[in-house]
Image 1 (cartoon, rainbow, N blue to C red):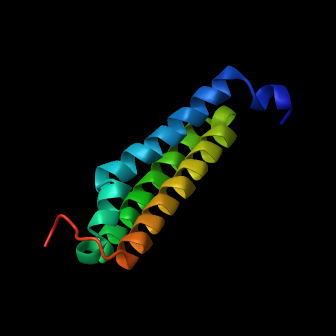
Image 2: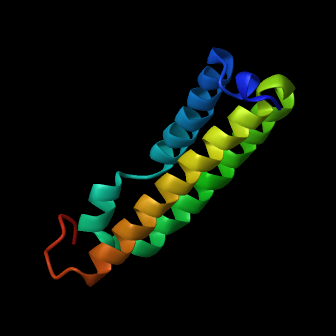
Image 3: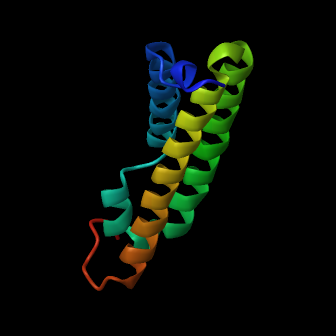
Length: 108
């Protein structure tokens, strides 16, 4: 694909929509990474279960969008993949940091 097509305004919108839907879907299934870190001691296993469920949902939506809009499929797939990697990394880090922390959580 020529660089002019990759950097077109339409691909930018498709990229942002794909990235945004991943963030929205995972956020709908999970609390924030900050809350996850604070309460990792009591919720780490449950949190990651919901991160995984949200990830599956997000992947389904991104794939469907890419199939429906073949012209913008690369931008949709790139935006969705990048957003997923960032969000998954945030929750992974939150879980690990929270489990290592001696600070009290907000849940018992």
